[in-house]
Amino acid sequence: MRLVLLDTHAILHRAYHALPELLSSKGEPTGALYGLVSMLLKMVQDLKPDYVVATRDLPGQTVRHELFEAYKATRQKTDDALVAQLERAPIVYEAFGIPLYEASSYEADDVLGTIVKQMSARRDIDIVITSGDMDTLQLVDDKRVQVYTLRKGLNDTILYDAEKVFERYGFPPERVVDYKALRGDPSDNIPGSRGIGEKTATELVKAFGSIEDIYATLKKHPAE
Image (cartoon, rainbow, N blue to C red):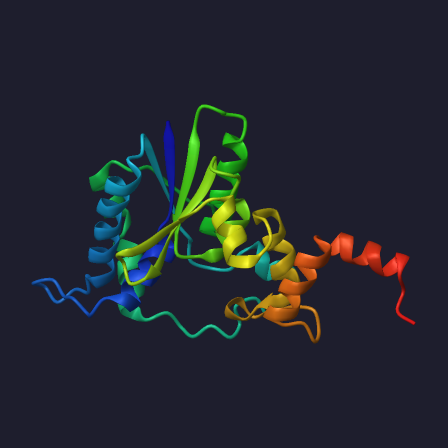
């Protein structure tokens, strides 16, 4: 059996920026919603899920802001046209019969990760996360947990299993979090280690593994 988890916030953002502005007969913006529906239909055709669950972000700050005050501080204000469609999106999920999960102070990917963790004991179900957020690649587990994501526009998609993640980064999915910690995440205004960018972070993780492994190596071979 196959469970598909939808990161709807990421999908709507991608659709909004990938498609031209569309308006209803009442002048309401609908481009992102049209893209969401198109993505849902393509997902069903490509993945043939037995179950589908949607997750979404809620307005306001999250636990991440409590941990790091400057989290997403450099993000520009979301366009009003996109906000309106984010608010109306649950109508689409209801029409498709898709249950929607959300949690105050948490983002959609937190909910996704929680569901994946809770379902980890079910060996009879494989999980596919549908998202435009590459952070979800850290959840990939061989072919049992995969990520179906957009490469370009709304039609060019790729399904990441552990082998595909390794092809992209040169290290396995469980090391994505170490790579992100070293490199940082400019889109979320999260600083990485000083002086370490994308290339150096990749080389360190490929050579030594986790951040703990890097520190263990430094203790064994301190710089002279």
